[in-house]
Length: 409
Ligand code: NAP
Ligand code: MG
Image (cartoon, rainbow, N blue to C red):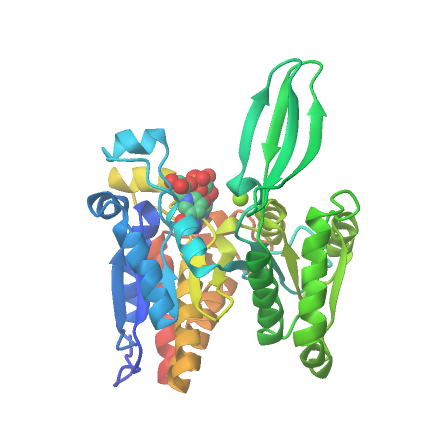
């Protein structure tokens, strides 16, 4: 394989956040085969593998988030969110919180998820000729809820106590039989950040922005989201949107879903926390595969964290531990690196680094379009060339060959 003579320079280090299981194995293979031969890689390394999180009592997660706030751009490997079974498996001191949750809260970020499209892997909806990006609000609602069961004959009320001690009350329900109650909240500050991140991202990527909630039913809560978006649009972004020939509109979520399905794609769809969670899984699956979904967390003041949308692919890891070569798809993790390197290049004015990121993505897509891919993709393949489902390492080698040729050209 022909290698370029000089490596591409970096200036500011990337915050490199390592993770767990199969994705941790892919992480070092991607660095070894696709990055280190070509780039004089500068990173500040944080090991968020579960053993290290446990050893540092999760301080390493906070340190990593602070590093992103300081340096501006991070790239993250998938990590285990521990449950009871993991506490046993890893002999943990505690059931540590989701690292993504901690980082999201510290960055006050919005999560943008977009599929990677290749010829030969067709969306379930044929009209989608280009991507749909889901922007998910990453704070509050049911993810910070308080819930209780209500016994027969009980009364549930909402009480808001003001600073001066005065109370506002509203009846939720008088329970004749037993039932359940849930309290949720959000804050103006977080909704405003969400709105700013969405408008900026849409302008940055030159796409229209759609926003949808259920404000006809939730006349105060969801309506408040709608009002905040509209105020921020009118006062800050309207001129820029109009100048760029872009549109922002709000519509009821039912209507949005009908329009999304009938659309061609090519827009950012902003959604509240729960709606964004489920709709991004739907969009990922409908575009082909969760392993082809990228994710970037963007803070309102322009800090970025890139990652794959999928998890640590545990089932493959257990097979890997038994000595089996797996066919785990590294594409979303490769695109996390290319996204982060491109952003770093943009912020530091390094056009060679940006060019490298473009080539890395092109080489990855070209490899698949040549019929070489992991088995999750070969199962979905509708391209003309026959598809070979290969191991991760054969796939990474095939990308490296194409990348090397592109960079030497
Ligand atoms: P997952 O790791 O995304 O995997 C679910 C299944 O999807 C896999 O078993 C595999 O199916 C398929 N899959 C996902 N990514 C793939 C890839 N790159 N290549 C090939 N197949 C792929 O989700 P999970 O099993 O629910 O979660 C596993 C662990 O990941 C959990 O500990 C969870 O906490 C963590 N997690 C982390 C993040 C994150 O850090 N962002 C996100 C989600 C989950 P087959 O086995 O059928 O091949
Ligand atoms: Mg989900």
